[in-house]
Image (cartoon, rainbow, N blue to C red; front, side, top):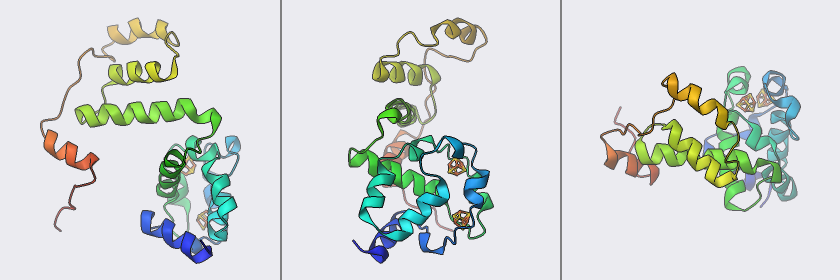
Length: 183
Ligand code: SF4
Ligand code: SF4
């Protein structure tokens, strides 16, 4: 895949034209987790521009894409209005699909999956279900266990989930069959 093809593929999937990035570095300067990242946001954009498959492989194996908080600070600072969080999301999906998840990111991936499982089941987050699902996937069964009683007593954890009524719409959303509303 050449430079144009790789950037076209990213654009098709995210609607972000990485070629427009001119490396001003404002995204990295504002990113709250940039100092923990192995590849900083502006570096990822430059690597995507290069179109080099080896660089793409390095991105998909990086910890950075899993550390991104989707806070959108980079997006709001970018003079070209490039939606980096959307690109990060696309990269995470590819990393998962291609089995390239960084070894230190497995707990983050477990949380990501547990969060989506909860939304898919209930249409909203059920914190108790999320915690149980996450602990079963990571094996961290006793981690933070002492905080549970306090959270129960303050009404922060509920045994049973609250579910939305439109289950069919929710199911279609997760199957990618939701139509855009008419404007
Ligand atoms: S969305 Fe991700 S990359 Fe952008 S500033 Fe936030 S943490 Fe950093
Ligand atoms: S802020 Fe925008 S233009 Fe500047 S380096 Fe980041 S992505 Fe590129």
